[in-house]
Image (cartoon, rainbow, N blue to C red; front, side, top):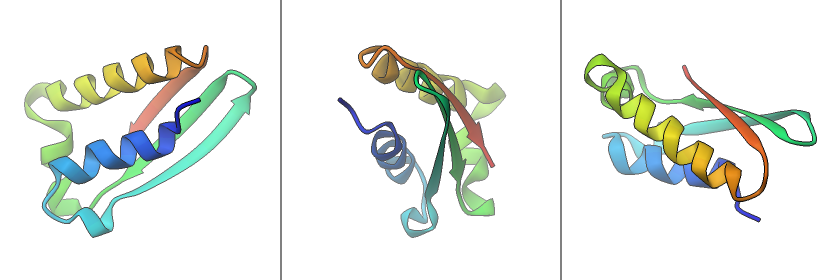
Amino acid sequence: MSDLKQILSNIAKAIVDNPDEVAVLQTEEDDDTVNLELHVAPDDMGKVIGRHGKIAKAIRMVMKAAANSDNKKVTVEIK
């Protein structure tokens, strides 16, 4: 079983300038749905979202692939 929270945290820390300010909150709606909230420093918000949301889409795609291996659904919110 993969730790989705840790995977998202590692991805975000690799992208941003202030990796110490990366925080991920995980909540579970039911047995197979996981909600993740990614919090980064305001200066790093553009790096995580990317032009036209391309990086955010890529992060969500990787997280869905990781969750799929555990037969779960995941949503990622960037705040």
